[in-house]
Each structure stands twice: as C-alpha cells, then as structure tokens.
Amino acid sequence: MISLTTTTNGLLDANNFDPADRNPSCALLRLHDIQISHMPSNKTRSVSVARSASERADRRSVIAKALYQCISKQGYANTTLKDIADCAGMSPSHVGYYFDDRAAILECVALSLYEQIVEGFPDLGEPDLSKLADAIAIYCFGDGELNTTFLGVLQEISGLAVHDPRLREIITEYVTAWREYLEAFFERAKPTGGLTPHKAAWLAHAMLVGFEASTCFDPSSCRESAHELFRKTLSVLAGLEPKNRDMPSNGARASAMERTSGNQPKG
Image (cartoon, rainbow, N blue to C red; front, side, top):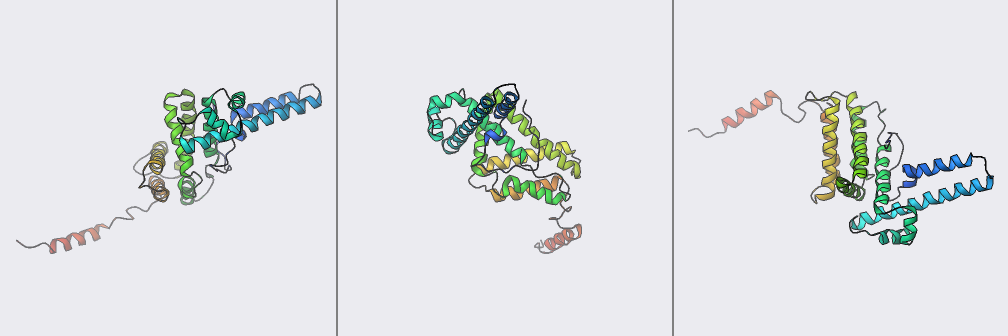
C-alpha cells in the first residue's frame, strides 16, 4: 500500500517534478543500496553498486518526465513507447531496461504527481482559519502551482484508472488523503447546516474535483473563478462567512416589499 504522508514542505512544479525523489520503487532502490553498502564486501564494489543504482533512479526519472510531457501534449492513448524514448533521448529497448511497459511508467508518474500534491498541502497549524482557507484555495487554483496542464494530466490518469486496478488504488489513497486533510481543517471550524467535519470534507472535496474538471474542459471557466468559488465553499462550510452577509435584513426586505406594493398600479 502507498503511504501518502502530509507535510508542510514540497514545492509543486508541473514541469520540474522528480519521480525518483518520491516514487516508492525508486526509494526501494535507494534502500537496496544502503543494505548492500553495509554488507561485508569490497568497499570499491559497494560504491560502484550504489552509483549504478543512483544512475538507474536518474534514468527512471528522465523516462517518467518524458511520459508526463507526452501526455500533456498528445494524451496517453496517442503516446507510444517510441515517443517516450525519443522524448527521453533513449531507444525503446533502453527504456524497456528500466520499465516493463508504458503502464509501469504511468504508475511511476501517477505516484509522483499525487504525492507531490499531498506533500504540498498548506500547514494545518495556521492559527487563523480564514488565512488557512485562503491558503488552501490559493494552493489549488490561485498561484498556478496546480496549473491547468498539470490538472489535465491528472484528469487523464483518473480516466485510465477506471479499468486499471493499480491506478485506481493510487487515486483512492490520494482522494482519501485530501478528504482527511479537509476533515482536519473542518474539525477546527464549526461546519454549517448541521454537517459533521467528515461530511463537510466530502462535500468540499467534491466541489474541488468539479472545479478542477471545469478549468480543464469548460472554455468559459477560468482559474480565477474556480479559486473564488472554492474559497467561498470552504468559508461557508466552515462557518467563517458572516450569516446572511449578502442577504438584506428582515426590515429591509419589508421596506422593499412595501415600496414594490406602492408602485403597483391600482385596479
């Protein structure tokens, strides 16, 4: 199982992500290096093995980045192993030395992208809930860290996961991490409408997914609008918005009704 741990660091750059840094399979390679280096053996041979494994992780990273770039330009369905190899500056057989097939590369990309998002979650330790809500909305839509190209690749991976058990497992754990993070946010607030923090988190995440899809597929939608609406969603659900801030008071509504009635033609 994948472990997606929430931390406060981790910069998200869609064009400069490094699968070798966070991908579990690459991490296993590094762990393997450590185990070998501590075994009674020739020191020179240990250094050589460690260097070889490091180079392997670097090559895997280059290949994963190449697939990401291909998906962002032409989609996964239109990307061949040769396309990936060309983008990575390798031959298809060379790529095959590091990954069994396209699906294995895609899994590496998916793990890296989703883990980067989770590791970049804003710090829940922020004492001001309004500032924290701002930070969450900005992280998702405001500053371009999760840019449209990046979100487009995630949307495509989500579609492929429908019939791919391993991708579905990765996405399920990513979604769970988002909901748990949002639930922790709402536990500090007072959700409106009798919602529990758990239900508020589910609702907020559903809105987030919808806004992400809109920015990718709806030409009339834009990141600025998604940012504003998602920020509003978090504020309303968390009870941070003043009650009836945009609604006239009872007295104002009564006066308006009287003025309207007075302007009606008499029969």
